[in-house]
Structure formats: C-alpha cells, structure tokens
Image (cartoon, rainbow, N blue to C red; front, side):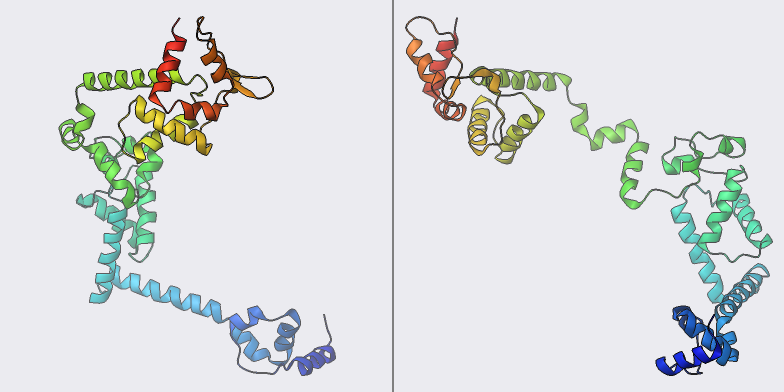
Length: 321
C-alpha cells in the first residue's frame, strides 16, 4: 500500500482530481487511482461505490411494488397489458401447459402471488417447471409430439419417460412442421405424400432395370471401382444433366469423369510392363491382335476408346468365351 505522499505524487503526474464519480468509472480505475480517491475524495468515492447497490435495491423495490399492486388488483391498465403480453409469450413457448384449464392458471398465479413475483415470462417458466415437475399441473404431451395423450397430471407427469422434454419449451419454428407431420393421420399423410404409397412393383421394376444397366456398364469397364465416391460422381453427373439412367448415360459420365480425374479405377486390373497396360481379356485365336492393342492402352486411353460404340462391341465379342 502506497503512502499519502506517493499517491499525491501519482495524482499530480496523472491528473487525478476530486470530482464526481460513478461506480462504472471506479471499476475501470487502477488500484492506485482507486486508492487515491478513497482517501482524498472519500465522500464521493463512498457514494459512487454504493451506486449499483442502490440502483439494484430501487429496481427490486419498484418490481416488488408493481407485483404488490398486481396481486392486490390495483395494477394500472398498462401493467395489466404487460402481464397479459408476458402470459401470451409463455403460452406460445409452452403449448403443453393447458391454459384453458382453470386450476392450472390458479396454481401458477398462486405460486407467483405467494412469492410476490411479477407476472413476467421468466417467472412464469419457473413456476411452471416447479409445479409441473411435482405433478401439480395438467399437461398436454401431444402438443410437443410426445404421443397422442392430451391431458395427464399427477404421477403420470412425474413418471413420464420423457419428463425433461415435457417440461421444456416447444421446439423452434423450423421443427414445428416435423411435429405436425408426426401428428397427422395415415390418410392425411397419404394425401400429402402420395409417392410413399405407390405400387411397390413399380419400384421393384425400376430397381431391376437400374441393376441391369449398371451390370451392362460394368461388363465394359472391369477397371471401374464400385465405391460410394465413384457412384456419387456418376449419379451427380447424370442428375445434373437430367439424363436417363441407362448404360449410355453411364458411359458418357464415366468417360468425362475419368478424364477429369474424378473417378478412381481399380489398378489391380492393370498389369505393368514398361508402362500401364489393361489386362488381356483372354481372347480366342484370331483375336490376339485386338487384345494386344488394348493391353498397350492406359486406363484413360481405354476409357476414351470405349466411347465409340463400335469399339465397345469389339470388346463385347472379345470377352465372349
């Protein structure tokens, strides 16, 4: 702790002087400046130091007086409208609170009146959580998508398997459509989602057709790796260009994506002898030249070569046992 002389020297150096203070300013002072004011500006320092406490007490006294007027039915029209607005905010965020049930309203009001608390959303939430957790309110679980029951109370609330959700505010607006859909009847859902109720044979036939197209495409491309990443690129290419899902579309997508380096090939189908070569398909006598030419191609060259339908037919003939 510095002496009076040392503090006086610092006051002269930094320009400290006895003047009106605020608690906020005191909080920003250095320890030495605060110490100087506490000694040489003591009355003002003491007054300002208690400023926040006085404000807090005044605010509390004002809130207490307001609450007293409300619970004594002496509130002003403005105070009544404020309370109504706060109740509306609470009910909007907590639709599981059955506000139409008079004993519910009386229980919450009694809880607030006993504690002389103002009727604001924060206090309403506290009252709701305390009373509901003890089973003292009638709640509507279906309002939160927690089943179909619209009224439960007592032990059924206390022992509810998802009590933490039952006491929480409703989901944000973005999640309400999902909740509404969960509550829809089967008929309503069928009307809004007709695609979910199509004849399953349609899907089976479509799936079989897609399977045939993929198998046909793969028969021409033994180097193609059937991975999720490769499949994603092929499907994105076809979807973006709105192409039909058939072998021709797969060939077009594959050729371009291989050139761009988006498709990974299976190097195990490639043999190396001074350079990358495609596997010999084991052609019959008289077809060795074609196999030899194919083996001299790189994977990318082979993909480009196969873009010609005539070349694909040659390969098809070559692979026939």
